[in-house]
Each structure stands twice: as structure tokens, then as C-alpha cells.
Length: 105
Image (cartoon, rainbow, N blue to C red):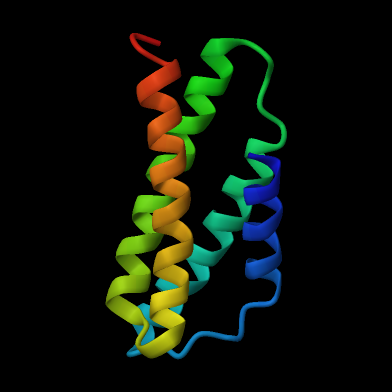
């Protein structure tokens, strides 16, 4: 999991400024990128209890889903494909952790 967090952080840091479709997209993209970065940082500070991990993973999944919606709506071409693959991959990974390790928590 640490490797995927590091890879996601590096991709975010190296991201080329996004092309926005309109003013709303420009704002939404900045918020999505900031939220994604914060979510990755938050994962590194999750507590050791199962409840803490499950809560953190749920927040991460929600953030990745919101980011995917923005990237899908506001980006195009290879940038859209790359960003969507990144957030959807992370969402899938943490959804699986929730499904297997957080039943009822």
C-alpha cells in the first residue's frame, strides 16, 4: 500500500497544469487536486485501530470518487485518461480493503 501512496503522490507532484473547459472546471480541478493530495497525506497519518483505518479508507474512497467525477467532466485526452486511471485505481484498491477488512465498522 505504501508503494501505491508514493506513486500517487509523485504523479500529483509531477502533474502538468490541467486544461479547463470553463471557469467552473478550473476551480473544480484545483479543488479535486488539492483534495486528492490531502487524502494521500491523511492516509499516512491514519491511526492504528481498525475503526481509524476503516474511517480513513472510507474518506479516501469518497475523495477519489469525487475527483474522478471532476476529472471525467473537465479533462480530455491523455491527461483525462491518466488522472482517471490514478483515482479509479486508488478507489478500487481501498474499496477492496473496506470490503474485506471493515465489515460492520
